[in-house]
Image 1 (tube, rainbow, N blue to C red):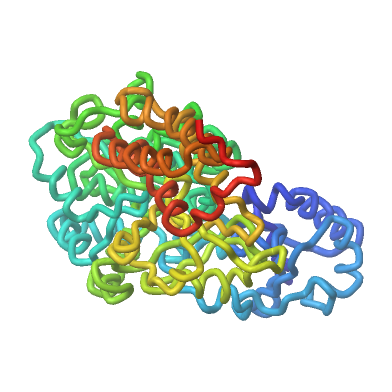
Image 2 (cartoon, helix red, strand yellow; image 1 turned 30 degrees about the vertical axis):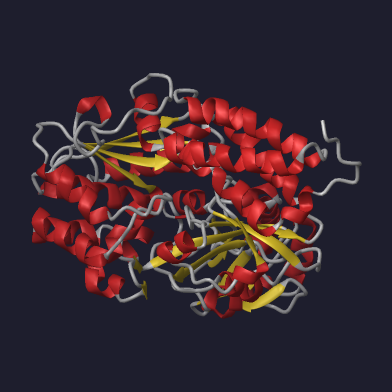
Amino acid sequence: MSRTKIYVPRETAAVSVGADEVALAIAQTAKKSGIDIELIRNGSWGASFLEPLVEVEVDGTRIAYGNVAAADVAAMFAADLVNGGAHERCLGPTMEIPYLVNQDRWTFSRCGLINPLSLPDFELHQGFQALTKAFADGSEAVLQTVADSGLRGRGGAGFPTGIKWRTVADAVGEQKYITCNADEGDSGTFSDRILMEGDPLGLIEGMAIAGFAVAASKGYIYLRSEYPLTHSILSRAIDTAREAGWLGDDIQGSGFSFDIELHIGAGSYVCGEETAMLESLEGKKGIVRFKPPLPAHEGLFGKPTVVNNVVTLASVANIINLGGERYAGMGVNRSKGTLAFQLAGNIKRGGLVEKSFGVTLRELIEDWGGGTATGRPVKAVQVGGPLGAYIPASQFDTPMDYEAFTGIGAMIGHGGIVVFDDNADMAELARFAMEFCAIESCGKCTPCRIGSTRGVEVIDKMISGQNCDENYDLLVDLCDTMEDASLCAMGGMTPYPVRSVLNHFAEDFASSEEPKNE
């Protein structure tokens, strides 16, 4: 008789709300009751608002139980948990949960489904099929398929991946590198973490495909230090892949050699910028480089280097398996495929939603997010991290499309969506953007280093009612300078949230104090 499979996520958000304690309680209760179970620590499906989400497999169907606490476990077993028994925590079949069933799972198709560290489980769900296909088709076919897909960088810049790979492939050099930027530091973002904890072998396969396509023999993952559980899971996954011959010399007898090294960052936000990340990887202080030369020509250690985000690389395997045209058939305009949107802040149902481009901000907030957690009206939504614009309700029907967002002075970035209700003080949020830049600036260029500091001072004067008209003009000029003259996106995009507040929430600068016309 086969053992009953029970799934409990080993994922940072789930663990933070008691998943480890739930798993221990399930194991202890099953042993005490003489029930033979197989306890599987899977990744997260992305429905963070339901964590810890426990699942039991009954006749091939997984039955979900949401927001389970260790104290619930005894009663759940008494209610016949192992057979999917009725209990107040029961949500029914996992794949019938509305939050999940209406998504377009492409990159995250295995997250929550598999044991992240089981190679047989990974291979059972198309794992390493794309890399094997790449070996059979050849590097030129891989490059063409990625170009045909229209995949753009998911780290925020949205640069076409096919062009970047082609540039590195055509560059002259005996040594080339693949670098994965896993320094996920934007507020409200967690898609990289969910993927690395839920499907780390998928990232490894994507990096190996990139290496094969451009003739790179070494890959580096630059992981943020604030992700200790991710580090543990990813390290074990790399060892697993290496031991099974999917990393290292002559992978599976293909003649292609590729290995991956995991590097931990030191908490610098600006190291999310590609050249600062490369400096840090080289053991130097994480400071932005001048461009040109581009990393594709002179990157890590001066060699041609691909720099891609976690989600970008993890999207590639299905593109190779299913074809570039199929991926390009999803999305809108030049925004092809899917993006993992992350709902955070004052939101009722926070979590990850993978949808094709073209879905609107309103649909994400209302249909998936369920509105604010407080039940109050949404006042503003910041999309794209701390450098993203604050979008007013009047623009919530804007489709998720890189160019459409550029048209309203905003950016999609990494897909983080942070919701604020009508109690939010937008003047203080504008101040936060400038202060964040002042703290996190690498200091190399004057517009970013000095402009952000002066920006905080000007906003403070406006909030206190000092010469508001003059300071408004000064703040606009300062934003122009930072946007036009900063060396990288740190200073160049800090004006986005500030301008959006000036344009849409200027009334929040009104002070209860009497104006001080000094």
